[in-house]
Image (cartoon, rainbow, N blue to C red):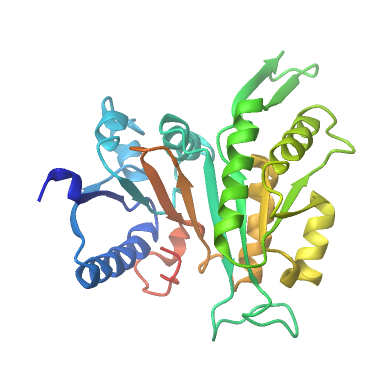
Length: 301
């Protein structure tokens, strides 16, 4: 067997209850690997809040290059009560998404039998759709800054960045995914074209252009606020949603509750290109107050 036949997986437990949840995910992976005769190598890493507090490092020199040798990364929840918000999220989670160009954030929204949803009268047959979120642009690009910080005249600027390439590759991937997913074949663009008239106009025009190549796919459009309403009222309508980074971040939390809670929700940060390294993570937070109590839902990973 060549090295190409071995699946290399990097496992990083993260913070709080993250290691507990990821440990259960690893058990499932090993069981599936045995059933499917998949050869694998697993290496554990300790990137997260505890390491940062001890060393001042989030990702040490050479970490990205080392992780690039793996086929995939299983990442636990990131967030430590003694580390200021944003430090670990930007320095670890976003850094890896950007470094590996994981431009697809894939969020399956599926209500499993026996799991309760807060939506009255809805069951597993009603809640079964997928959100495809662009993962490397928008407000998360880090463009912006302060002027006259900590003065009465302070100005803060946060600039959303959209490129034709970034929009098109995400939208095209969503069309391909919709074509393969099932017989429903409905792709809904979620944006805010009536107010965000530059970046979201680019999304709208790109969506229309790419749609011409996929005449077998029914297309639709929702303003993001309308999507939040319809997702609660008629979740059964949706098949695949494609959306921007910021809006995808928000609506998938709503979707996670519909499928039974954030402890059930899982996500993939995917680089679809040959040889790309992808990263998979549960969507629930690190929940440090529950660490060691064996009460955290392990379904997501």
